[in-house]
Image (cartoon, rainbow, N blue to C red; front, side):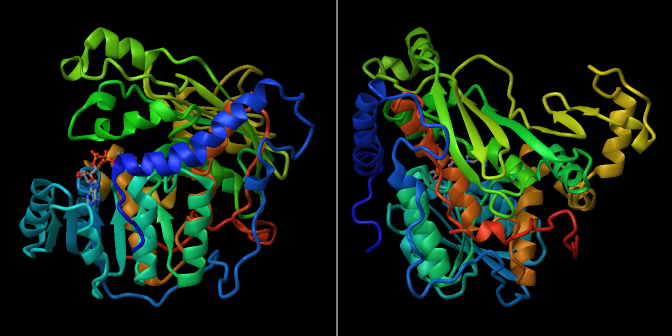
Length: 484
Ligand SMILES: NC(=O)c1ccc[n+]([C@@H]2O[C@H](COP(=O)([O-])OP(=O)(O)OC[C@H]3O[C@@H](n4cnc5c(N)ncnc54)[C@H](O)[C@@H]3O)[C@@H](O)[C@H]2O)c1
């Protein structure tokens, strides 16, 4: 069995504490006495940064294509966030939800009910135990398994899905440790199944716009990006029957970036990470902890039952990543302070700079696009930004925006799901594959290691094992879109 006795707390102990956590204790001691960081490629824990040779019998999946499908048969595990994926599938004419699964029967029944209402077909329902998902995954009439469960379950569910011949679409982050990232990579390569992380933010209207502009040279030579996940989740982190049941535990055990991919995914695609460039190393620094403790003490959530908890995750974690081509990325994480939502979503190059929240664009040569001249320190005016938006709106967004209206997260959940499902239908390589899932997710452990080592540089493993040098960016701006 792939998941022996995997209870939530058991996993955290086994993986986070003894795996990451114990090393962190060791590194924290080493970090205080550490020498100044060597200039390049240095690592607080160099064994994690290197790529083990590809085991025999495995082949790269960068360009993996699979036989086209007339309809895509879907199973969904975890039906809180997963209900949104069910809805997206129901709104995609070539997808069929054949099975739904949740520990909680009420959630599984509600998802099944939505399928009956919208499509008149009842999917099989699996509920009531921590291992019942295995039965669903073992069926032979499923093409792809959506995994929208707590983080501790992502990897065992992905592995079993791929071992049983299904593609895995997994929520963010795909994995919480480097070791688990390698398991995903090796299993995808061995089984020839896709493991796609459901990074919906890659499909936001502005992210797709920036991607399209970057691909068309608006920013010139790309040099720097900034991104993050700034989202006041204090209430959610104490919510019962929701993420509060498990997500707060990570704040008690890891000091680093616990949720890197919403910011990093889009930026990695702008820069062609894994395809022409690659993450090389990061340094990470955390502020002190304060937000969660203060909120807990002030609000006494759930009748004060969390009084004894100690939170170790710094409120603001800032990492700087350097890529093989010498570009830099600033990545932040803060979910415990009163601050308006932002993923920052910034990109700079020799020709211009974009910053989001709110959207702003500065160009070196606005006249090139028939826009009014700006002063040296000015963003484009609203009208000119709008002109650029009209000219560079991503074709995927243009085609799907109407259908996506009302879907989760401003429509990007639908656009993402439609796009991934359409790639499976056509047998095409999805916009992101397992190497992307791994390299965006591994930042959780690596940021914690750098923080624990006094912000020493940590090498980031090359999950492509050198293939990034030969690969060109996937053409998500240019790919054919059918049937929308
Ligand atoms: N991409 C996004 O915008 C976004 C938004 C929200 C959540 N998420 C991600 O989605 C995942 C789930 O988050 P959530 O907010 O729905 O969490 P949640 O705790 O609210 O819901 C998780 C669901 O999984 C079920 N579950 C737990 N263990 C299970 C098991 N062994 N078998 C079957 N079902 C099981 C629970 O009963 C629950 O219904 C997380 O990875 C989270 O990071 C992503």
